[in-house]
Image 1 (cartoon, rainbow, N blue to C red):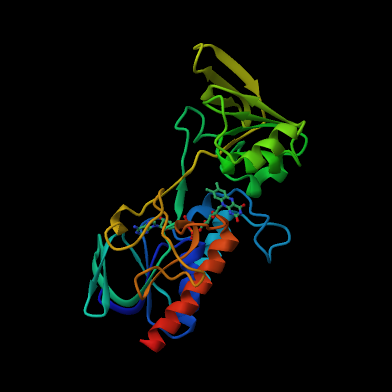
Image 2 (image 1 turned 30 degrees about the horizontal axis):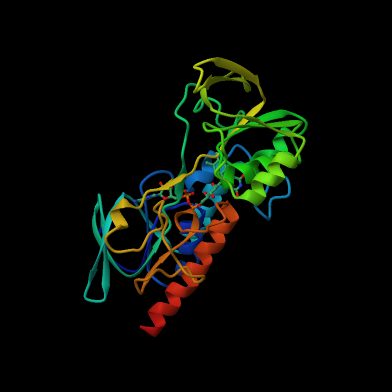
Length: 307
Ligand SMILES: Cc1cc2nc3c(=O)[nH]c(=O)nc-3n(C[C@H](O)[C@H](O)[C@H](O)COP(=O)(O)OP(=O)(O)OC[C@H]3O[C@@H](n4cnc5c(N)ncnc54)[C@H](O)[C@@H]3O)c2cc1C
């Protein structure tokens, strides 16, 4: 790649990064987006997206990601397939280190997303989108009047279980301990919800089915006994892991590794912003990531005009 110097460098080509790129490119800022994998990000894995405005019939996640990419590229966003491995601050510039060499920019927007932790059990990968989900907000409506399981015991898992109870015939929370980690109020709500049941001290050993999930094999951690659970879906809610190790030395991160930003998506370092699932308190949805991306681009532009 010939050009090495840009007004804005964006790390990550999911909904947050592509929206940021659309905005900065349309603002006539020279903009480079660095993506290590598929343009479109995690939403490309969604079978059907029904909660992104503008598509009343829903749209496949892959197509949505492609459309975002095409729209940003149309307005001049440049892209490179490379992994960002570090950022250095040098004489008012930011140097983004990548597997395809260094790029300099006056402002950087980090939009690398956050991976949902997986169980790593047989069947999990095979049935993603066919009964295995990591997002009740996204997929609960596909399980109307069907029995489902939720794995986890924290705030996110119990919130997902309560949301699922509005759709599913039964929600079974599988937790490896005897006590939930979720706040007392969420616990009270879950215990009071007649559709929610609990399998304590249990872990998932495998996920089985044919075209779609049919059953789970559980391991009872105290007795070592086995259990079979007939469900049509399993929602895994055991945490997130952003890929931010390479940023540790320059940016404050929260306990899990998410980037701390203010409401303008600014980090503590002037001219470095973060958007989407990689930042703390993100809504973890395509539309919230896109919104963050737009906000980050607006304040990156303001930073450039004021500095
Ligand atoms: C199966 C599935 C179904 C979903 N369904 C829905 C749904 O129906 N509705 C909804 O709103 N949301 C849904 N989501 C959630 C949604 O996909 C995410 O909230 C959204 O994609 C987050 O956007 P993002 O841009 O912040 O991050 P991501 O989409 O995760 O994109 C980040 C990108 O950055 C790249 N990257 C990371 N680190 C680096 C690096 N160091 N260098 C270069 N590139 C890097 C990654 O390869 C990735 O492409 C779903 C998610 C999954 C997994």
